Image (cartoon, rainbow, N blue to C red; front, side):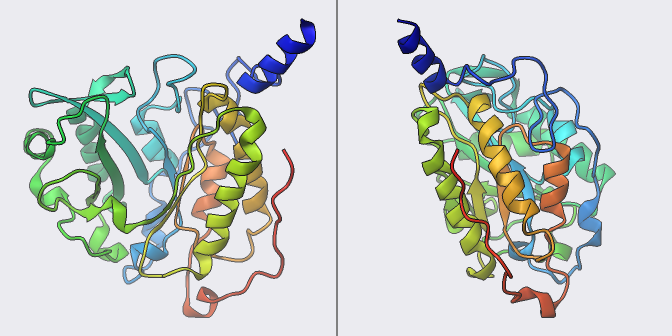
Length: 311
């Protein structure tokens, strides 16, 4: 009986998991980032395409509530943006024109207007930056959120705040703009989410499947530096399942990701967007430091490779 209980605890992620607030170089579930980096994009040349910028993002950005199976972040939206996060993953439930923020069934005590206000306030304070926002419907099946999204933009932001094109902008064109990565039908509000090169193998049934998850992350990160430079690469390190909730997965995968990036810090490669659960300020800074600064480094070949390790 004890053996069976221990096996179940391992599968769910109970063993080896810290329940108190933890702040590590690779993982942070405290309420405040260790340090901030609110204006790092100011150093990127205006003529650099956004597809060649390596940037940190958060999966289910607003999922701060709902228990262990729903919570994916511990920092507020303002703290995430000021820490350096530039890609947001926003899920809205649509009920009679209202757009509330959800992660599955879990209401996240916010509505889409508050997200827009947070982005507006940030870009007003830091106009050298840009914010990319994946936007999709969740926990409702109206398949008709376009009108409500437009209404919220007019009420809580302004039309000129948006990047109104499917084309990838340069950094200069993107400064001060919200770029909606549209994952719903209707006329263009910005870029289409499906135009990105995406690795989002989020299903992790148990912690025994973490090696498969890491392999997916590793393969996509390895492909990004030599991939289509006109296309934005997006890699999700997040994952979850019935027997592997987000916090348990992040505490382990983030370590793999941190070690992988640390081994490549002198290579100045393009990795695209790296989207995480419970990121730390140091791993965000590490991702920010991967920037393509000049043509001589754009085709640089890695001197060594970091092979996927066992969990």
